Amino acid sequence: MNTSIGGGVSTGSVSSSSPAVERTSVRRVAVASCIGTTIEFYDFFIYGTAAALVFPKVYFPALGSTAGTVASFATFAVAFIARPVGAMLFGHYGDRIGRKKTLVSTLLLMGFSTVLIGLLPGAGTIGVAAPLILVLLRFGQGFAVGGEWAGANLLTAEYAPPGKRGLYAMFPQVGPAIAFVLSNVTFLITGAVLGDANQAFLDWGWRIPFLLSAVLVGVGLYMRLAIEETPIFRAHQALETPPETETGTRTMPFLDAWRHQTKEILLAAGALTIVFATFYMGTAYLTSYGSKALGFSRPFVLLTGVVGAVAFGTTIVVSALYSDRVGRRRVILVSSSLAVVWALALFPLLDTKNPAAFVLGVCTTLAIFGVAYGPIGALLPELFDTRYRYTGAGLGYNLGGVLGGAIPPLIATPLAASFGSIAIGIMLAAIGMLSVLCTLALTETKDRALHSR
Image 1 (cartoon, rainbow, N blue to C red):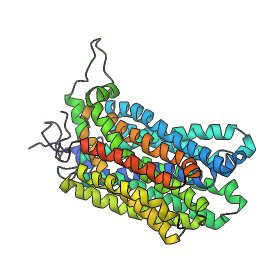
Image 2 (cartoon, one colour):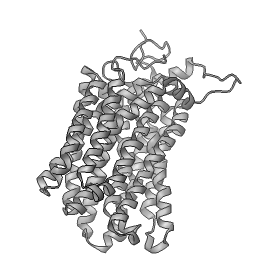
Image 3 (cartoon, rainbow, N blue to C red):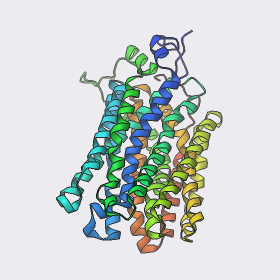
Image 4 (cartoon, helix red, strand yellow):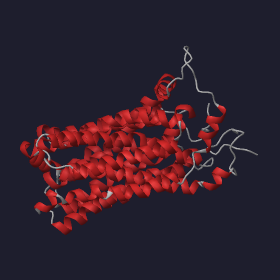
């Protein structure tokens, strides 16, 4: 009896015993997706760490501490603007030519952009060209991540057996936790060897984590080339005729997704806004806040980030597994509700300047993020039809990234300077309420099949 790998009705052309599926086991796909997202997000996160710790001095020295930090986080935010654009372009090809080929392209683009950042001279050497080129390369990083997330999750979700989609879609979701550990550890080791206050660290030591990306990309490329295209996508290509417009030309996945499932794209983006806000505030912004506003040493702040990554990695695993039992929507709603309450308590806690309070603040913020991040790996693929699943899932995810990942870290510093740190908490609580409302409006997808509807 032939059954769809993703659950639901038979496709009639792809069975669990087909040669391609035998060559590419579900476990192998899960591991490959985890390694791929780890590498992509390692590249993405080391930028955030560098933006908090060294970029104000290297690329914006003439602006002073506060303005330099704002400018540095502005370049950080550029990637989130690029992500929806990347989601549309790579989503188009992912829905046309396949998930695997598209993911190879995103990996190469990310590696290329990251290594070039590591080679980019500072403003003291090439002047204003340095920050301009930095923005361009950061855009390349965001462009790549915009196409990465949806494809990596589709690989596992479309291979996963019925009832275990949350489990297998968890693997690419754990990648960011591993990546954040790697990012902080490389900066810790580099700082320990060269000395955090040493001019050598500011001149070239911070570049080492970026250049190491070339090695990681090689590993990821090997893993991605070794897997097969998903059975669901191959069955879709074999059985489905691409929709055509009245003029007889093929329609674009982006237009199809927006025309047929605008509501799902916008609700998904709204639901994920607090997810991105808690993560990037808990990582990039609190890295800067802990070292500059609270006066903690750089090694302590980075080590706290490692502990926080363990916390959110653990909650990702638990929440993804639990979502297979109780549903994606309910678990995400718990995270958004907790975020509203926690946002108001976070900065009064941090401003005690107690080291234990800082560790608690970072870990709790990231753990709340992890509760929601686990289930969304399965939720977004389940929301969209096969013919534009890559595009739809990528758009919902990355539009949420613009609202939650780009704007809060960018405006947090001037907000705190004008109204005190509690203003940041109020901003995060408001974002959390938006996500609560959008999550309530979403339908449950746990038992939805992934065949074309």
